[in-house]
Image 1: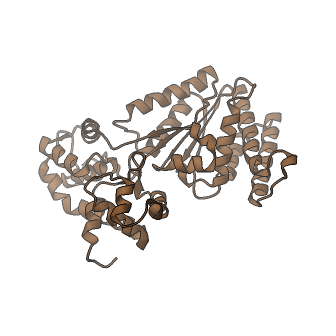
Image 2: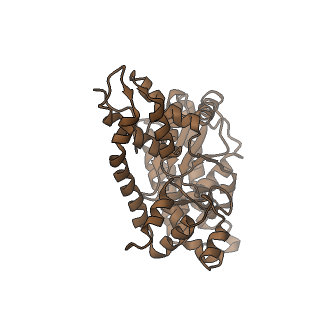
Image 3: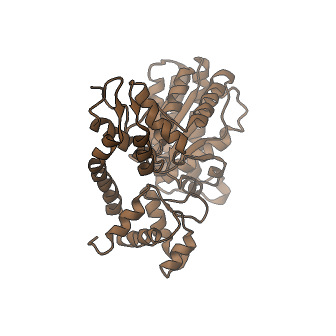
Length: 386
């Protein structure tokens, strides 16, 4: 009996359909490590939950480490981002016992002070120059530069990875955008550093709302898998265990999962277990997929019900209106018109649903559910108690 190679809800090193992004990450880390380059444009992978953003970010972290860079990993949302970042950088220098470590410790204290002052909402008059609201960006710029220079003297460089970027606080986003904008124009060289992040589909809106410099970030959208990539996601993990998929079984899962990586993993994991944790030489049959259907549908019901439960009455009204549209990605104006409201009237609910990871905007002016099948689930709620 072999354990399932499928990992629903977990970070995975197997990323079918993301090969181009993986190559770009390796090249990016190579430039920082070998050329001591500063990557002037932060890269941000965006998309719905379950498409593999965190797994891709972890791949970048491994690529950085393999190239001799020092990766710093942060997940935004649990606390204000800048104090967490400064704490991680402080850990790097704790064992250095050098003048560089003392300098960075001083810069960390300066950043923490600037954040606390900015939090008080202090400002200066026009004649006093910059407002204290920009101080965190200046302090962060100095800290990143000093850390990258120190790591360079030790033969390395700095690679910062931020997951759930859309959940970062406004002050941190503004400071990051400011710092990266000004680091690119610093005269000091070399400055081996890069920033890679991941967030929900509307992360670009969140970042640019915080700072116009955020428009210069590189936002890369991760979509659901193509048919070929989805097929590989099912077959290749099994092959490594000496197990094959029956053609009809693969077709059944592809039809049910609609290319959504999380659902592919969910169906494949359940089918593997229904097949009896097959030994080498075993086969996952259509019968195994069908036998696992009730279990998977129960998990999907919890998945959809949780999302539905997060929505307020006003948000549910918007979700129903989207579900009733014939297009899987209707125009925002059409949805508002169907509700008998101007587009501006649904803006607050729309943004809140995006923050919750329930709704996405795959292109300007369009709305779409982040998980396949949610439309059918919503329509089934009509006539039932919310």
